[in-house]
Image 1 (cartoon, helix red, strand yellow):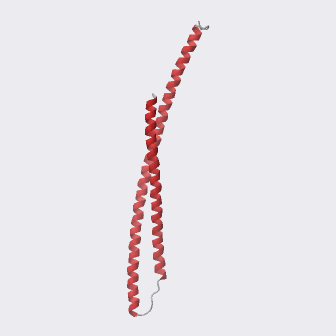
Image 2 (tube, rainbow, N blue to C red):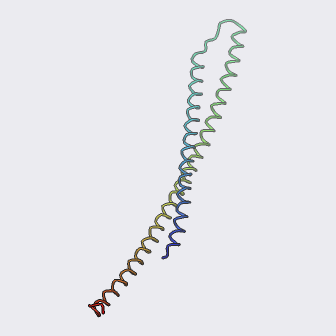
Image 3 (tube, rainbow, N blue to C red):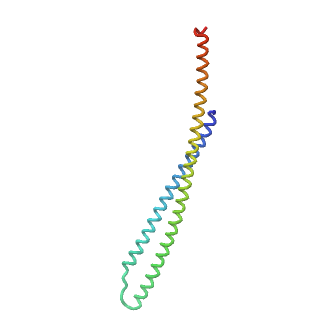
Amino acid sequence: MNQSRINRVKGVEKITENGAMLAKESVQNCQQRLDEQQARLVQLSDYLQEYAAGLGFATGGSSQAFALQNYRAFMGKIEQTIAHQKTVVAQIQAELIACQNAAAEANSQHRSVEKLRGRFEAEHNRAQDKQEQIVNDANAAQRHHNPLGI
């Protein structure tokens, strides 16, 4: 194994490391968006409950009918908004799952490249050790045949 092969794998390793880092950031961003949208859904649901519980109708003929009509229209709008928000939350949840899967794949690729680099380095080190041993054996053999160095 030569050093240039190890260096090429190190370059790929940096790329996969960067990809894994970006994928992790994407998961974090998506999770943050999901948390925000879920909080908004809770806020809307709470508002609907508060409005439904707190509204009292005045007694008296046509004004009560008009207030009831406005109340129903407003409640319908809030319910539509809640339904839309539930759709938004579901979409972001699906997006988060996709981001998590992409991050897992990016991490897997990075670990694979790390292992490959480790194997290349181990093979390179073994080759260097073997070459060093050959040189040491040759020097020892030379000293054995010519102990005085003459």
